[in-house]
Picture (tube, rainbow, N blue to C red):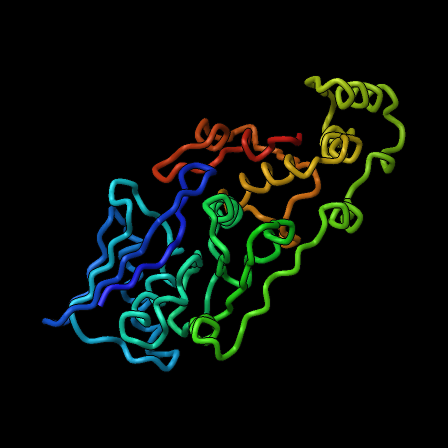
Amino acid sequence: MLASITSCGLSGIDGFTVTAEVNLANGMPMFEIVGLPDASVKESRERVRAALKNSGFSFPAGRITVNLAPADLKKEGPAYDLPIALGLLACSGAIDPEALRDVCVLGELSLDGSVRPVRGMLPMVIHARQSGMKAVMVPGANLMELRCIEGVRILGADSLLQAARHLRGEEEIAPLTTVPYEQLLRERSFSVDFCHVKGQKSAKRALEIAAAGGHNVLMIGPPGSGKTLMARCMPTILPDMRFDEALETTRIHSVAGTMPPSGLLTERPFRSPHHTASHASLVGGGANVLPGEISKAHNGV
């Protein structure tokens, strides 16, 4: 039996559609994942096997082949654990394959069947909405960064069993309630504020001019004179981020794995790289390309 389930992958800070095709056939037991997966995707075989058994489901016996299409794009990360597990349940008849239609599924599985958060959730959900998906099933721990996304039903699953019960119609998961961006702006609180800086009139005047005109600033002075404090306070005198700027900034931090607990970024970011920081840490890169300090400071300081 063949089951097909929609998921998403990451290319830079943009998402792309991945279709997990799960085929269960008679023969010697085998579990193979194809479609240019990296090591973390291949290891999902053991996570899925243990999660199914510890959630009360029987692991299907037979030749299991999982194809992550398109096969010419590299798949990275553990976000395909949940779609693969639900695809296996659909193949074995535990859930109706039709329930997976127009639903994008993302999530990492623990061995006990709980669903763990994954990085890059915001750009993947935005891509799923643009692709016409009616619903997106994500880890419950990723819901905070998705509170302002409209136009798609966002379902937060905390376990494989909960996801399966929802798809079988036994226990529906309540969709995420959208929060207006203006409300998030009212709820934010700054840990530091420019008004807390006493004295330093010339330096504060220079920072105000730089904030108004988008200029660079070079501060020179002895240690402890307040240079870092004033720089850290500078985002508090910058204009509020527009909603599109907040989404753009949050996408970068979501991919980099530096999301704050509050979710969507409503404060302009402040980055303070060490003077010994490497070239790659400043501009980004690596085997698995991640944003650097310059990208993380986008729309901020």
